[in-house]
Amino acid sequence: MTIRFKGAQCAWALALALCVSQTMAQSSYTVSTLDGVHLTFAADERLDEADRVLGNRSRFVFQSSIGGLGPFGGYVPRSAYWAASTSTTVSPTSLFGSAAEWSTRAVSDNGRWQALASTATDRLARSQGTSVTRLDAAQGTTPGHVVTDINNIGDMAGFNSSRNGDGVSVDQPLVWRNGLRQSLPLNGAVGGRAQTVNNLGDVAGALWFPPLPGTNAADFVWRAARWQQGAVTWVADPAVVAGASVVTAMNDRGDMLVSSRNGGYSAFVVSASGQVTALSPQRSMVLAYDINASGVAVGEAGGRAVFWVNGVEVDLAAHLAAKGVTRVGNWQLLAVLDINDKGSMIVRYRLPSDAASTFRKARLTARP
Image 1 (cartoon, rainbow, N blue to C red):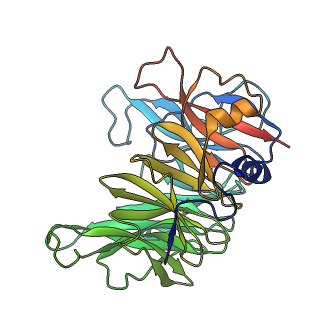
Image 2: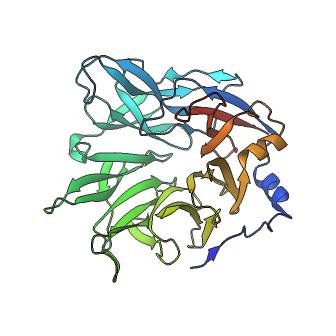
Image 3: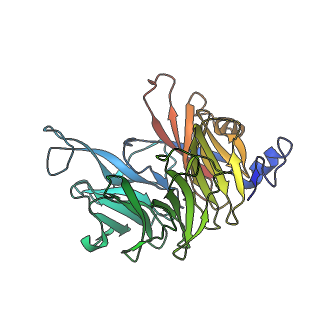
């Protein structure tokens, strides 16, 4: 296994502009701010192939059977979508009706499948369009079951959290196929989590291993891992991807986006063959959130929104300025949260007048 610090097909600086133009070939972007987004919900908003945004709107409900609400009620997530639009501001539309209990936990690339959770009962479900099918309780939907991703045929990835006899949290990686739960093998690990599933049914996430020889006995380590056809086929080499690591996204050609914490935060792209490309290795705080079919990864580095083409960092603000997108000129672009195969993106930003704790979201719809 080797590690690279530059793009394989783009020589640093000299060919960067050409490399970006070939992969991110948009002429410009239409900017739409997203109203009604609540940033504390478990699932971020996601773009589908038609540039719709799917996720959760924030809705106030009075005290009921929903756990965690005070006597005067509070805000809960409700599944919603933001229509593909050229408007400067887009408001959400409730996907299952404003009174529905469903919240979105994951969205397929094509937007036709969603993984759902009930805010009233914690029961899991999946939907195809507006048709919701609850998972049977025998499939381990409650308690402690979490769904993290869903693909274009409705396969869901996730895990179940429990505690062993010593009171230590032990997670079991899971995949649901045709709505039926399957446990994924641990291969010597003591636990694990499935975080993403691609449209071929390959699953990736992390395994929890006992401490390495010579290290603190309490230092169990999360190591990024992949399952194919139900078997573990790759586990991160700790000599290359140091510290705790997890696969956060994976495309259909098998490129995996790996996040690592070892003092600071690092990110890597790992090819299907296991070749590792470090993303912005000169920085100590790098977070990567998504990767599309072309292998373009998106995230943040050094507190700025960036994307990576063949491993080369591109500053989003500079990219938009070069495309003539003036509306975002005074925005503090903090992160790119999602990208679809067209190159449209969801970004997190802050306005100059905003407090440091304020975050906003917008969609950048790619123009051909």
